[in-house]
Amino acid sequence: MADSKNRATAAAILPLVGGASNITSVAHCMTRLRLGLADRALVDEDALKALPDVMGVVDDETYQIVLGPGKVARVTPEFETLVEEGKAAAPGPHAVTADELAAQGAELRATRKAKNATPFKLFLRRIANIFVPLIPALIGCGIIAGINGLLINLHWLPGVTPALAAIASGFMALIAVFVGHNTAKEFGGTPILGGAVAAIIVYAGVANIEAFGQKLSPGQGGVLGALGAAVLATYIEKWCRKWVPEAVDVLVTPTLTVLVSGLVTIFGLMFVAGEISTGIGTAANWLLDNTGAFAGLVLGGLFLPLVMLGLHQALIPIHTTLIEQQGYTVLLPVLAMAGAGQVGCAIAVFKRLKHNKSIRKTIKSALPAGFLGVGEPLIYGVSLPLGRPFITACVGGAAGGAFVGFFSMIGDKVGSTAIGPSGWALFPLLDGNKGLGTTVAIYGAGLLVGYIVGFVATYFFGFSKQMLVDLNVDTEEAAAGGSPEPLAPSEPTPSKVTASA
Image 1 (tube, rainbow, N blue to C red):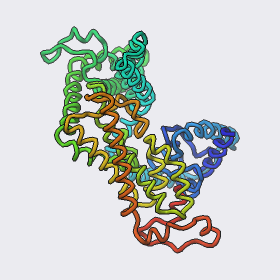
Image 2 (image 1 turned 135 degrees about the horizontal axis):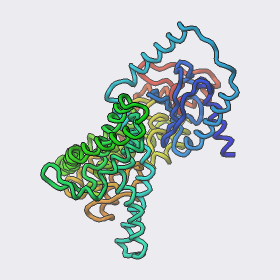
Image 3 (image 1 turned 30 degrees about the vertical axis):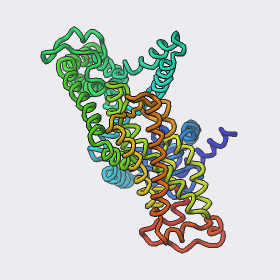
Image 4 (image 1 turned 180 degrees about the vertical axis):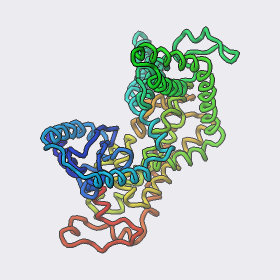
């Protein structure tokens, strides 16, 4: 039954994105179906938003359809199957004129240039593509590390804890290799060569090498060094492919790539990246130690807009660097407060719009994911289409962030041993410098502050009088009896809110 429902969802989406012939790639992340489209003009976005299972869309380098956690992982395989079946059954290519092709190409280039081609966004997107595939392993190993720490503190199963430590630490010890592999793949090189160069960083034998007047340490430079080494290897490889004769390419290109980039990594990148990594750790700790409440206010308040834009993934290298250095990242629990503000906001909307069955239904379905730290369903289905509640949700996140940041400022650090989850799902990953009980209490209290402030700010300031008049109606009765009066241009229309839900 579940499979047929997921297939029905996929079948409903496919014609609204131009059909199988318009699909060039299919992928998914935790909450979004990501599609490569040949022609975005073929997308019926209003009808797509109106589908019950679609919580919103994001027009980025890939066309992203927000389906929510769990749902997207089940719909994607069905969608891929339908695309394959559609392409197999499609007739031969339709002949088009050169003018038509030129017009389509010009439109696509203009759209993508305007929305997606800024150097900063392209850079952040590449960073995300490198690190996002690593998140499942980071989560799994982080939770195992948390369980192991609890067993050690309770003096339980002493024969098992060394094995759990090995399981939890193995991936982190070699994460540089995976980063190098993914970096080379993202920048158009041979992934295994990127991994081979990055492996130098974690090789124990580098301790026998001296650079810049000091002995190198295995792991020095961490993921940043691995990223730089793999990028360098990719450019060297591309240069070799261009100039090395084909007859000896298989021998010369890999050798030169690994040799040159390896030497630069050992005698340059490891030291430089090590200094940068140390600086990141020092800066993060200084920020929370000295300006904790203010830093938490800013970070917690701005994180929802970053999630909305998909730019939050660019913080992964910073989190990973902090975990490598001190065993946990102090930034993630602060940023997680943004989700708490969003949850409080959604509950307030639910209470205020007692007669709007459509929005209340969306909130009921999205709140469980919100409590677990997955904010996109509530962002795209509730707060963002409404406008004002998105701002009040950010206020709640800022309050929670300030609370956690204040305790960091007085010496009670709250950190996470892995990245990915937030909300209640972050509890198994918590760690700090004052014991697990204190850490859990501060984080839990921060969530409570975010919930309360997000609720209060939205309840009292999230709606204008006109918004309440226009939105607090039974949308099903309005649809049966005629459309309600349109809102002012500055306010969202009920049809748009319903579609987004």
